[in-house]
Image (cartoon, rainbow, N blue to C red; front, top):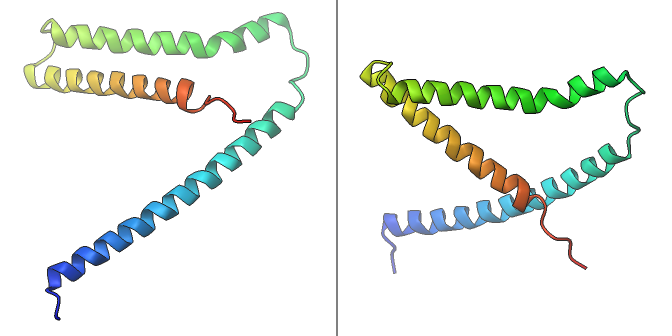
Length: 122
């Protein structure tokens, strides 16, 4: 029985797809083990030397302040686009970019809080 060329291509595609899936799963397991090892090593390192309280306060506020400023800038740009402060084509691109950014931020937050902090077994 002779197989048509498309059937051979389909079988090869399915085989390579299965192989890729197996390899990806193996890599994911290795990456999660390495991430766990690095996290443990990071937690075991001694804290930074004692610093002045104002330096510690500035360090602690950098991320939240920077995050707030960037989200306010993005919101301002979005509102400017919505209210007609930009050309029509530019406004459409800004709105699409803002929607993509918010969707990415939401999915990243969900992955960080729930996927990374799965309950430990045993």
